[in-house]
Structures are given as structure tokens and as C-alpha cells.
Length: 321
Length: 186
Image 1 (cartoon, rainbow over the protein chains, first blue to last red):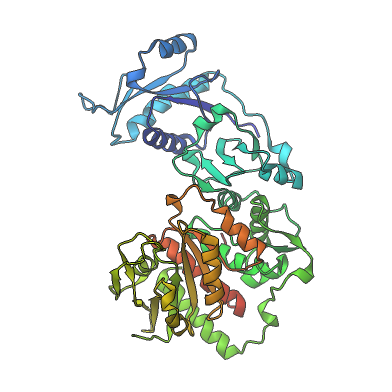
Image 2 (cartoon, rainbow over the protein chains, first blue to last red):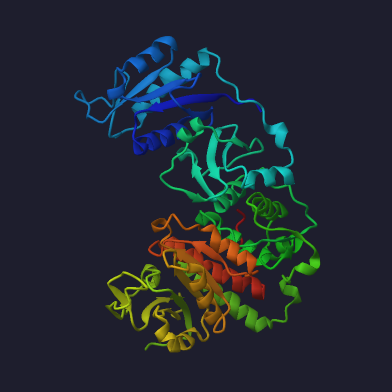
């Protein structure tokens, strides 16, 4: 997949301001380009966001004279003339996003359309099937800090010893695709993620893959699978289905039985299994290691079952579950 | 003490957030029985529950579900079995700051699974202790081949508590095969 990628550097900004701007910009141009958040020392920069107080320093001026790229100064002093952006300076707080979006369109996107942009290498062919070695390497304690990325840029840096992930701020509700890959994290990669909050690595990975529709066909339909623990869903929208899938697979269950019992498509169940495998949670097992029995095998009277379903339905309605 | 036919029990260590969790769900002001904490070795909070916290929710047909918080200190363990009898499930909360937190979790589980095996575990105060790994809990669950859900939560967050309630429900649904209808695909 050929996808243009923009390199944006930030310098001298607080993590709060930086994160807010990253999310805004990501939302604005996510469908057109991937974004790499890079360091000011990077060889290829398409846009610089810089604290106005650092703009006149010799170092910055040298960079700007040698490499011609657009810049936007960020000021925390309210604008004197009422403009949100004036002479390449963005005045905070940001009350309207339109001036920023217009500035980006005029100074960055049109600039990029006239010039060649960096092309992210086509990674999709490298990961047609996520094999066991890939997963072992992803979780190996010897690979302490890894940079996870895809064709839209950085996703996170993970620490396999501490079992945590630091997320690229604009991709907190991220999904990915078959270009998902990793490499040893370089010092410069750490500028791309926010370390204010760390996430449980296995849960974050599970949520990432579960939300990624391309990860459906990497597990065998006929298999039996058993998870080691219930993955923790981050979003309410898929909480019900993920908890029900967990309740089945924690006992060890046949994939097709679960799909039938929960009235889910086989693709959804396979994506759950793939997300668990990628998060290093569970394994394919033999049938005799499974204790999940579909309801048709249970001796529950219709009256009891009806009462129970009705009662549970009321609880779900009451809590909006 | 108000005894409802249907109930959800909040159990666990002192200071883990049981009272806050009930507050986040209850539709009535909860009946609290707090007193000055004299057991500062176990937890530094100034007040703690010495009786039973009680909250409730009402279903659309008027059925009430009692939300019961057990006192954290083990000297009140005589009351635990009474509260847990016939409960929909038990939400077991554990303070990540507790010294020997795995041992504490083990002790609570050993006790409460005798009363009711539909249990979900919530590890709380996770941001206050970054030195101690969260992974230890998952490793322990795996090593002991336990099937209880275990989540990392903030007891003040209603959505986190609802996730735990929903996991209790999901366990029951799967157990009796009440899952075959109504799933909106993800």
C-alpha cells in the first residue's frame, strides 16, 4: 500500500499542548496522510510546531534556513488583534479550530501536493500471516523496548519487562492493519509517545487488534482455544461481546461452538482469538482441555431459563449494558 | 439490615474502594457505617466501614437489587457468608498498594469462593504504586488456572464498575446459555 506520510516535529511545547495539537492535526488529516511525529533533529521534516520563545534561537534559525519547511509558532499569550493565527503564530487557548485547519491546508497540505513527500515502505507484504516467531519476538523480554508502528506512523513504544505501553497521543483509540510491525526503539522514537500515562501492554495490544478489522482470518476456524485471563475492553461499544467471548474461552472452547452460541460471525470470533494470540494471552488446545459446553448440552429447564434470561435482560436494561 | 432477594456483594481489602463503587451505582444515598479507622497499619485512610454499606437499584418491574459492601477487616468475617448467600455475584476489590497484595487476594478468594463462585476481581489504586507490577496479578491467575475475570480499575469510575457487573452477568449468561440472542456485532 502506497501511503504518503508527513513528518511533523514539535519543539519546546509542554506535553499537554503538544498532545492537544497532535490529536487535532491527526483528526484533520488522518484520511489523507499518515503522520510521523519526529524530533527537530530529524533529516526530513514537513512541518515544525515550535514554542514562540525558542523560535529565534540560532539553532532553530539555522535549521529553518538550511531546510525550507513550514513552521507554526505556538504562543500562550492571547492574540492582541483577535486573530487565532497571525503571521504563522497560533495563539492559545484554541477557541476555534477552523483557522488552524485553514492554515494547515494552505501551508502544509498544498505545500506537500507540490513537492514529493516521504513514502512509507510497503509493509503489508511482510505480514500477510502473523506467525509464531513474530509474536515471540514481539513479547520477548530480551527485546526490552520496541517501537510499534504501521503505515500511519507510530502506535506506541512498549516495554516488555515492565509489561507497559506508551501510546502516541493521537492514536489512543487506534486501530491498525496488516502493515503493523515493530523494531527496536531508538532514542528519537521516545519523542513520539506520551509517557504521562502507561497502559497495561497486553490489554492495550488486545484492544488494538480487536479494533482492527483486518485481523480476522489468522486463526483456524476448527480450532479449540483457551485464554489465560479475560482481556480488559477499553470501550463500552464492544464490552458486552468481548466479555461474553471471554466467559466462553476462559474455559477452553471450540471456536465454531462459541460463534454459534453467541450468535456472532465467525470473523468476529476469529478476531477475538487473533487479538488474544497477539497479546500473548492463551493458546490453541486439544478438545479435552476445554470445559465450555454450549447450552444445548445443559440440563436447564425452559421455565428457569426463560426467567433467567428475562431477569438478566432487566439488569442489562437498567444499567444500559 | 435490609435483605433483598437479589443482590451484588462488594468485598475486599480495606481502602480498596468498595464504598465508592457502591456509590457509583446506587440510585439511593448509600447507608454508610463509617467510623474512625484505628487500624492504620492496614490502611492510612481516616475512616472505614465497620458495618455493611447498603445501596440499591430498581429494575423496570420494581424488583430491587441490593448492593452490599462488606466491612474490609477480617474481624467482621462472620457477616460475609450471610451477605453473600444467593448473591448474583461478588465484586472483589483489592488495593494495589497493599503489602503482599497477592497473598491478600489469595486469602479473600479462598474465603469468598466458598460463598459464591461468580466472582470478578478489581485491582484499584493502580496509579499510586508504579513500583509494583500489575502483571503479577495476571501471572498469578494464569499460574493457578483461575477463571475469574481480573481488571485494573478506578472504583470511582462508574463505567469501570459497570464493566465488572457486566462480567458477572456474562459469566452467568454463558453458564446457562442465555447468550444466543441480542448481540450486536462489534
